[in-house]
Image (cartoon, rainbow over all chains, first blue to last red; front, side, top):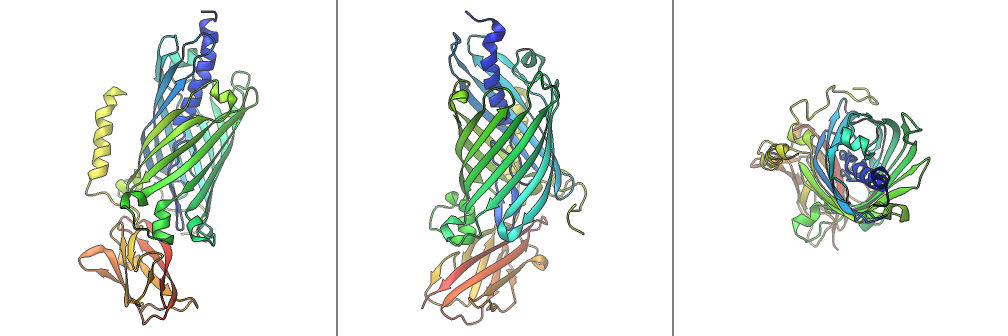
Length: 313
Length: 121
């Protein structure tokens, strides 16, 4: 080995954080007018709901570099989303990270706990336009000491004010284009200790084509019913820290949207040269439950307080 | 993670097969079908939803190209199937018709939707 143990871990740590960053950002689906925005796998959706992602499994190959033979990481994530009122909710998520190979001792342990508070402040049903604002807080020091000492997870926390938007093209005049939907997310992550972990911009977008929307609102095709539940999509998620290169992933995939659950799978393709130094093309699989449907008559499945912050009841 | 696996599998299985599970009521299919062109004017529109409906908070309107209602206003729930709605129609002329529905599922989720069908000349 020509590198010290800690120096060799730096690219691996960055790759691991890419993996963890992917796995922890799975959120709830949202409905606005005719449009159902499914729970996207890499980024958040624009709504607030009662849902559970369990598990989200992410596999990423780690390329060989600097005398390190390469290896892979597997991350097992979960997220629990709960509404406080109809439009205000919170989410708790964490993930168990494992790393194998790479010529170093295997690593495994829990990531830092993350809490999100989010408010849906706009839904214009005829336009299928939805917006939310949220604050994402990562509690530094709550994860595995082993991962922290190896530099795989942040030793300090962060807070990220974040804006979410979703727009369905249901008002577009050409029928076959109406199932298209776009979502976006923009946040600025403020580090608790910038000298240790820099601030960064996080920005994501998705393009979706909803086969359920096509069947319910545009044209019922004579195809197997299974196909009427699919949402092909592509997500792009990027991070630009104040210090260091911009990294990100392009994630094309497919979601099966059931009545009480959804299953999604996406490839995770490095979005630029800097990201390719850290990871190969991996994949992500997620099983997602709609607890607002499964447990609607319990506090788990309905808002804790039956009111909307933006409408008089 | 291994020690949690049985619980995860059990929860997921229960969620998928549970007979007590409800969900948002979305349109499953319709007759005339969504976006269809039919040769003969139908006397009734039938809608099938993905969940059972609360009829008191469910409604359907069918309008012609001029925006005039062509349904009789007497929407009924099928006595044998709480997911099936029957919408009697007045005599239809050739043209495009818009169906607008709102529904409340038995688990109190509100949904809305619309689609069109055409009666051919």
